[in-house]
Image 1 (cartoon, protein in one colour):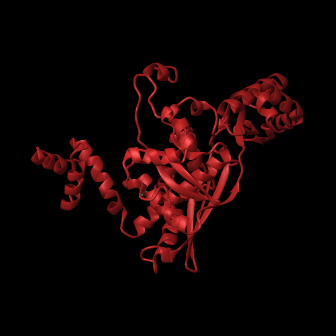
Image 2 (spheres, rainbow, N blue to C red):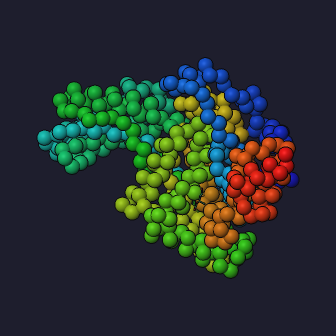
Length: 408
Ligand code: MEV
């Protein structure tokens, strides 16, 4: 019997108990730190800002079930992903097609009078660069990470850029990369007497790509004689119109960003990377695509994910630790796979809804709850207000306030 059966119908306490029984919940992590703690984390701290965190159960990836913590303020995100994940689970789940994981750093030199000569000079210093990188961060090299490759590119306007490809193991590794870049940059300035414009990691993470697929039998879906073609057309359309494609990709990131936020990852890096990669050919393209063939819808997502499972705020914020406990993932590559599968599920949920009932039907009840809360409904009357709003078909703040007044 699936422990998560009708999870969405349970009370908050019941959900916590289900997770606890599976050793996926630790109440000692479920608390809010005090102002003193947060005052050490950011400059000019004033208060904290809460976002709800939920769990999307049973994401089946390469035969393993993950229960995915998601922090999001958007009412329908977890509901949509859960629905899609269930359909895809019945079809055998998600399959990881490929994965790699290395980060990129840039040292940008400026005002180079003879770029060809400079390129050759930097290349000839390659052995020394590896040594400087090692000395800058011996620990990462000792555990098998660190600088792996380098290349030099001549850019326009007398810029020359040295790319360092760095393995940061399970950390997102911004500090590791920047430490190595600064040391190598300083070394090259001394050696070449040329000028550095900047040294910084790149968020266009083309060496941290993960590809995940799924395959859905259309007979499991409503509107089964047309749905395959409609979802394929939705995918094709996203590839020819950037206005639609931005929304298509936003839906994917609804899931991925929620997981990244819950696990204490850098959501801005993940978003920047995803959208830059979507535009890498010069034309903004969908990160997930669908095709219909002989009764099956085939989905594929290919996305860069610069994630980490150690370091940064992850080992500091109690809720990030709790999210990691729920997810049970301790290495970056597995987190990449789960995040990509979640993005594909989220995209399927959106396209399935959009090409059948439209987005409002599924959203309405959840939307009505947030409207009722805005109008001042509480635990004792929220369900009555939500039912009323749905019944009259006006999910508006005015209607909710008017109705609440009649209850008083
Ligand atoms: C809403 O947050 C996300 C969607 O607009 C995504 C999409 O249109 O594909 C539903």
